[in-house]
Picture (cartoon, rainbow, N blue to C red):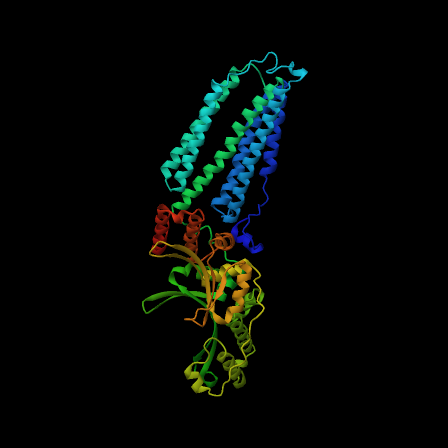
Length: 536
């Protein structure tokens, strides 16, 4: 389930796993492996062939399952920071279960050694079993095992420091030591004078050394290797937009329209019309030229309207507009009725709708209809122009609706709104004090809505700057809130160029979470991220 689909149905950052055949397939493969292994030990005919099939099926199923996991992490963005935190807890619990497993095996071994039963010959080691000298091959394997711990720790710290070659060398050395260890373990099994069926001694020895030291490293190294690959990819700053720019969703379009759209009633000169004016209702969105692709996506979403480029005073912008009354009536207006705006722009939409209805009923061709439209126009946006006031001095604006009791029905609305009005800001002082700030800015008339957004996020403060009394800001300063509440919502979901700001913002948050911003090396990384951000 992709982030875009997930965010349409849930307001949390956790990965709800989609239906998969691999758990059932893997369970079947493990069943074949265990039953055939038991059959082989009891010398059943043809059991060896089934055991071979089991050894093939298990790695194959593991590969298919891990392939899907890697896709969910790398390409679908399902492993958000909240999910990664859960994975860390899962690894800790896995290590705990492994320790308890060893405790159980050791207890069985020492219990049998301290009080050998009659079945064991009342002695330890049992009669007929020659114990392996612990200072020979077992000691060598212990040294190799501890050495692999050193090399993997070296790889870990190299990765944290951004030392790619060191991390690679550390991982390669670890894998080599693991292979050597496995070979020596096989030699030990070959020369031993007992088998797994030789009572408690053989069972505890083979099960304690074989099961954990073959399956355990496999479960450990493959996730670590993938984690390493993912981290290196993130450090490469190869930020592709393909993963997040899929088809737009309805609530995203409404949220973005709440931030960037305009409902305009243009009054144009037309000598053939009553009073020499013509009424033109227009829905439009104007963005910087770098986001023109977003306008085309909105055009594709509605399947009406057009996108043009306008150059004014050396600045280029893209404009998406719908001017056809038919398209406004059949497409644009129904969308905003089904997915309503929740900022005070909804008042403009309500007034806009009244004008379109008057045009559809031909009222704009009458004197009464023109005056009614002008009264509505006087209460929209910036009101009547000076020329219109001069032509119609007696026009009084209608009462403007007040939008209250807003409810955020989908996180996609918030994502769209932030795509328009949000900011992911990295602040670095001359003394290298680093802070991250997430903010949303809007006209002060939407103060109540910002309190709703604050409650929806579960964090932040609503501020009204003294120097800009007509603005209201929702600001989140807390790193903990940014990482646990803000970042998961926007993971792989933003559509505009603000997506890149978010990526850099997230990278720095990870560094700060690991306290790397307190080190000279970490500060260098953050400064390089800021420089890269400014160059985009």
